[in-house]
Amino acid sequence: APPAPASAQEIRDAESCRGHAGRWGRERDGIGCLVAGQRDGLWVALPTSIPRWEAYYRKGLLDGPWRQYYPSCVKQQEGGYQRDRRHGKWTFYFESGVRSEEGSFAKGMRTGVWSEYHEEGPLIREGPYQEDRAHGRFSEWFTSGEKWQEVEFKNGDRQGPLPQSCRRVHQGIWFMDHKERIQGCLVSRQRVGLWAGWHENGKKAWEADYKG
Image 1 (cartoon, rainbow, N blue to C red):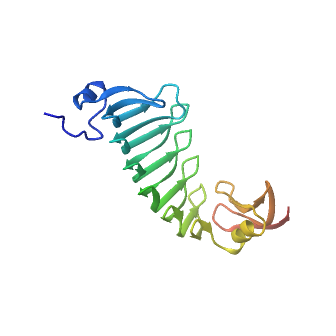
Image 2: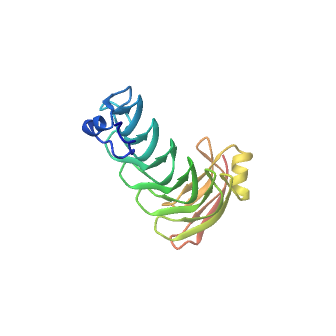
Image 3: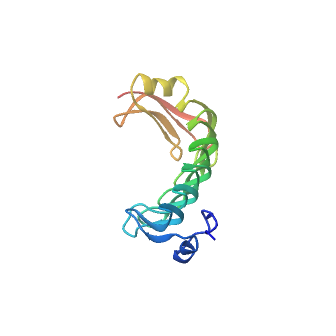
């Protein structure tokens, strides 16, 4: 009788690969099981590969848990795939091992509430995504845990006159430092326009207008 169809997570080594009539071996970027010429079950990156990763396949498509590592072997990201697209909860990490972002994907696109963290650990931003873009009201915090502000995003763009002017008029980037509690427009690493800083208690400490 032919072998039963493999579950993506049933094939983890050469023995279980043979049990599903597969061939265990290596390809250009990884080692794992080939069933009827397609990747199935657990695959891992070659020892010389950068980045290092672990993934599950089903009939040649990514399907199941995924993990990727920095060259230092610290986990870089983890989540799941469904039919070759990111799906379900994902977590991303700084090279220190502290998480940097966390949220969900649906059919390869960010969706629902996403949380962003400072490299020292505290939550600094949280808000909704639609079709892979920030869209809706976001809350932002200082690294001290003090609430900073609430802002609107629309199709990935930060709203408000100053951020909009920074992007459209100056072709700059809106810079924020959640630890030093400052924000403003950077153009070629130079401060331009109105900048502001806050006290630890969340009250504004100063404003200054930069000509660049």
